[in-house]
Length: 69
Length: 272
Image (tube, rainbow over the protein chains, first blue to last red):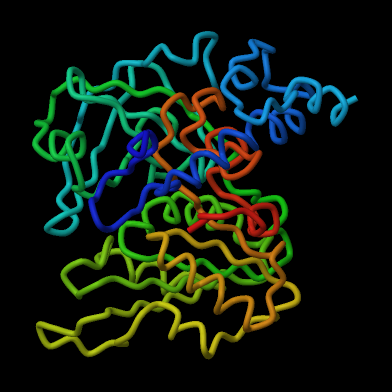
């Protein structure tokens, strides 16, 4: 998804989020921080896929509930 | 003004194509219905069958029947737009964004810093400022381009210089063709500005690297971050804060900008 917000003029203008970590930060903060600021809802729909994939078994939905209540 | 369906474009006839510099052309468009816009608001211009890209009109905001859009040739859509012929039908939608906060500038010194094609959005602001010039303490315009050939709107510089309360200075990075004026990047013009820094606003538009150095320079001169407005243009796609291509932190440039107060965005990464 590096080209998602790519601008015209190669070499003149960068993409705003060039590296994977920038895009990952945007994804996480958009869902859990900026959506709460802008719309007063968390961007998590509660599907649980992140918990299924987490090798440490983090209860992410639980954390979010605690953090946003 | 946004229509009921913000995705529905309005047909616009290409009236005239003005060649400003070898890489920059101004498209004069006559939309089938007037599109109201404030200085700094942008529009989505479509070349049918090729794509859509965001541009800020460079014409007087008082004339909603005719939009002039000044375009630098950089990619697929702009290549096609440069090759368009008068009489072709293009599509416009908009105007989006908030535009420049002109009411904040009343009674203050306004410093405009432009680079390259970044003078185009500033020209719309200049028209808006010139329309009610009595309300501002002064308007000071600093403009930099790569070479004398690439100075945008060069035939209008003398007209602007002759305006009361207006100071216009231009500079080029590379002096060729017997250039007699200032040489150096645009920030060198900020060294000896004659304005009351506590009571002034800076508005800047240009390539991201220029915005970065203008911001650093202005902060060094004593401007506060809240006095600096930057045209943070990204490749806006939807125009209404939905798609997430243009966000800087929680701010959507298409909805909250594209001219952002530096105070709001300074704490986020990859601003420039």
